[in-house]
Image (tube, rainbow, N blue to C red; front, side, top):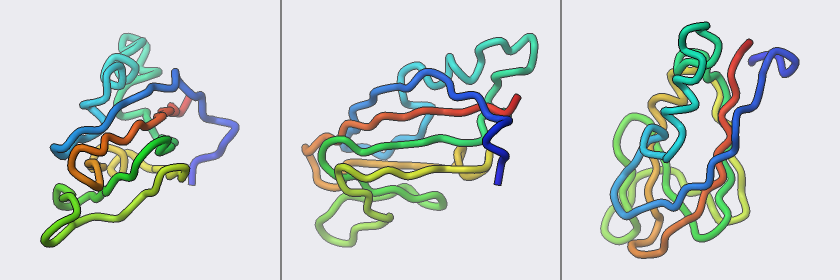
Length: 118
């Protein structure tokens, strides 16, 4: 686990989920924050070591090894309900994280705060 005192939170981003599987690079502003100060190597993708994600409205499914699928038929992925939060730690976990609306057409709104190691 990363030491909390060595982490710097970046800007919290608001994202509306869709009906196709997404990863964090699909979140508007996430890529820009990863690349910020790239010349100093302070806030690059490799240094994003923790992400706090809160599901504000509706539910999502998430997974790492395969793209999650929505309810109906055979749903794949863990379920994060509205009002719940999830903390992702470790570069590979963050890069591999995928998510989707749990129910088709019920767009979830997420608050996402990446943190970098300094």
